[in-house]
Length: 324
Image (cartoon, rainbow, N blue to C red; front, side, top):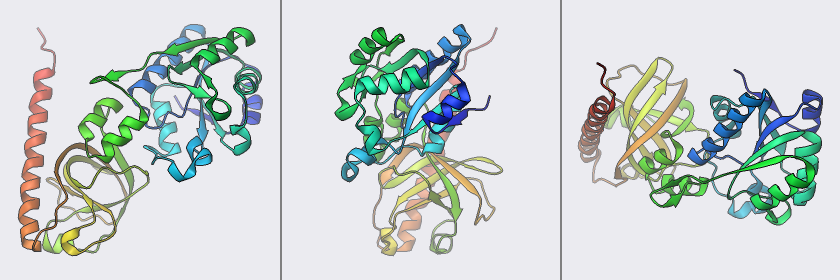
């Protein structure tokens, strides 16, 4: 099923022609497990009622408009967010332009204009920490009160907790930035990943250390500097890899790079698409006395990556249900 994307309230009115919707509202950056729980409720209700499920989200992220100087790095791009909606089985996405004028809507005006007049929503699903309206004056309870008055039901979906923490986009960002990619994966329900195009490197790695693929990534959020066991997806398949995120201090680098050495891969690629999925941090970045010393460490990193994936494979085999 292809997600229908509509990028204004006016276009939605022309598109839906007054058809009632089952709606979710939120920024959904990263689409972590808490977000996934909301969308699962939305699609389930849509299927049971025969109505269309729609996610209402915003572009740019509201923090870019309200407090640009402190806006956090986004976990995914808007296009990646839409792809995640589609994978979750949502029928449509209404992407509202978030402008200063839009930010001044009161909770009452937002509910009336967007949920009633635009979406004709019969049911609205939000997380329990949902905030909306001018200066975030409205919360989930406010929305429920407005729904009772304006004629739509509100379902407040409980937060997902992990290790005593409420799963949130903020917590995912903190974990990724600290290099805690395993914890981030548990919150996301999948490995944190970066994607983009392969770009030619300077060639020092291939000559002096090991061959790598250099990623020109699209996302804003990047894992903390260090070496990781990763999975690299390219045109011909997926490979286990060891990936360095850093500035290459041994070569007096200053620009952040993401370089992946694909295990058991011998082709030389200088273009194409690349996705890197971060599975485990192996060590922090370090400056070495010489390229030879760095190469010795990189070979140890590669061995550690192989060991990690071998253990992961055995664990997956043990967790499979036995037949018979």
